[in-house]
Image 1: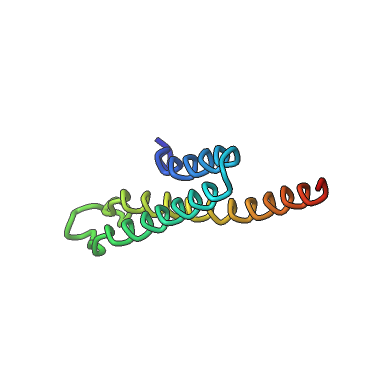
Image 2: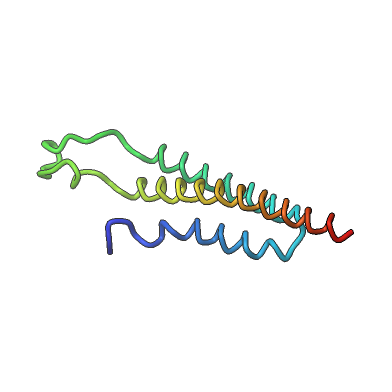
Length: 110
């Protein structure tokens, strides 16, 4: 296992796959999917932030560096939420550009 476990990247991967699949559906599905993904990402941030306990003193737990005393599970949830939010923001911009291109091409052909 590396510094960041692989399950942190599951949420952004699901968002990206859902976004790609939504281009074969209606426009509403695309925006509802992006909105739902943004809400889930923000919830991950909030839940991860609230799950972080108080700072522990390394002397009371008997661990040498303070890094060994921290529980990183909530940090991974925060990282997944942050990556999800960044992915949603990037996909919103790409969606706007893509829909402008599709709308312009429909207008030109009509």
